[in-house]
Amino acid sequence: MTNQHTLGASFELSGVGLHSGVVTHVRVLPAIASSGRYFVRVDLPGSDIIPARVQSVKSTTLSTELACGEASVRTVEHLLASLAASGVDNARIEIDGPEVPLLDGSAACWAEAIAKSGVIPQEALRQELVLKEPVVVYQGDAYVAAIPAPSTRFTYEIDFDVSAIGNQWHSWSPEKESFASAIAPARTFALAHQIDQLRAAGLIKGGSLDNALVCGSEGWLNPPLRFSNEPVRHKLLDLVGDLSLLGSFPKASVTAYKASHNLHVQFTQRVLDLGF
Image (cartoon, helix red, strand yellow):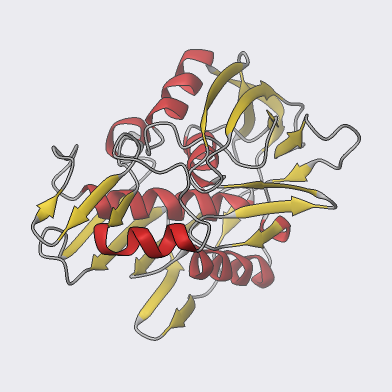
């Protein structure tokens, strides 16, 4: 068992939301032990806090959206992945709008801000989540699965018909490799031929070549990539953010193939249902 941790100081970041196109300001503050990570819509006085737990999931359409009562917040996965992977168990996240800023499309700015604020121990112990049996959820040939293991490990594989992406995989262990250097810098990506359709559906209003990689039939429209397999590292980042909705990562080897936020959340709920 290890102690819970919170931030050593608060920090603030602002930017445009990927889907809403709305500029929001986020302030992340230390929180008391065992309060967890949670959102507060400061533009909605008197509204409920929104726990960053799987029970709060409202939607998984190209991002993860949490809600409690009338208050909701969308595209939470990059910030939550950064907090959880940095060891921050308890944090109050104040936001003045409906969507967490996309920033540069990665989690690098969040991870850097957390590192500058510092992470400090608290007296309460962190709940240890030990997977007791294999778990799998799937849809078609896409799946998320896990088997019991002595430590946490994430592996992700993607397979796209676009030659610039193709088949990629990456594996990351929080105990052996820095999230800030290996996973956080990986940016969100999109296929050029899908952009008009997504915008017509009211999505990616805030997306641009400054905050997302875009891949066309002839290759990337805005190179260079930060990693040769940056797309799959970003998918792994999303998985880490969605799995953080358990409160802490389970001791398990988690593997995902061609999955989505929806499958990530289904898997997280299935693990929670098993109990610990």
